[in-house]
Amino acid sequence: MWEKFSSLFKVPELRKRILFTLGAIIVVRLGTHISVPGVNLSAIGAFEEGGLLDFLNLFTGGALERFSLFALGVTPYINASIIFSLLTSVIPKLKELQQQGREGRRKITAYTRYTTVALAIVQAIAFSSIIRGAFPVDATLWFYATTIVALTTGTIFLMWLGERITENGIGNGISLIIMINILSRFPANLGVLWIDIATGNIAAYWGLAFIVLLVVVIAGMTMVQQGQRKISIQYAKRTMGRRVYGGHTAHLPLRVNQSGVIPVIFAMALLTFPITIFQALNWQAGLQY
Image: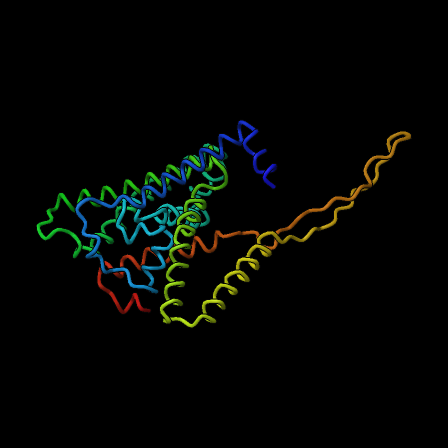
C-alpha cells in the first residue's frame, strides 16, 4: 500500500496537484482561526448547541463561532450557483448563453460571481446584526463597514481558491473545502463524547452504540457511492472481406447515486440564508419552525 502511495509523488504533474491541494487546505484552516479584529469572542452567544446555527457552524469548520474571515464559508457562492441553475431553465436569454459553449458558460460564471458578492454582503450584514452584542460599545459605522468588508472578502477568497483547486488541484474545490471543514470538527465532537462518557453524562453503552452507528452509516454511504449497475452492450459483428469485426461485449456503468453529495450541499445552502435573516431580525418563532 505504501508503495502505491509513494508512487503518486513520482509523477510530476500529479505531485504538483497534490501539493497544491494540500497547501490550499492549510490556507483554509488557517483562515478559520483568524478572527475579525475588535470582536469579543467570549461574548458571542448566538451559537446554541444542537441548534441550527451550530449546524451551520459545522459546514464552516468552526469559523462561524470564531467570527473569522471565513465565517460565511462558501454558502453565498453555492446559493448563487443554485439561483442561476434555476434561472437558466426559465429565462431564455440565460438558456441561450448556456448553449453557446465556453463563452456562454464564462458569462454565466461571471454573473454567478457577482451574485455571490451581493449575497455575501447581505449575509455579512445579517451576521453582524446577530452578534452585535459582541462588538465594542462605542463601535462606529466604520467598524461595521470594515467587518462586512472583511467577511465578504473572505467568501470571495474562498470562491477563488475553490476554483483554483478545481483547475490546478485534485477534485472539486468547493466540495473539498466543505469536506475539510466538516472533518475538522470531527475530532472535537469525539472529544466531547468521550468527556460526557467519562463524567457520566452519557452511559457508556450509548457512546458505543453511537460509534457503531457511525461506522455503519459511513460504510452504507460508501457502498451507495461506489455502487453501480453494469448494463451489457453487445456490439454487432461486421464482415469486411474475409475479416470479421466487432461482436465483443462491453458494459455501461450506471452509478446508484448519480448526484453524489450535491443535493446535501444544496439543501444546506438553501437553509443558511433564511436562518441568517431570521436570526438577524430576531424572528425566533420563524427560526424554531
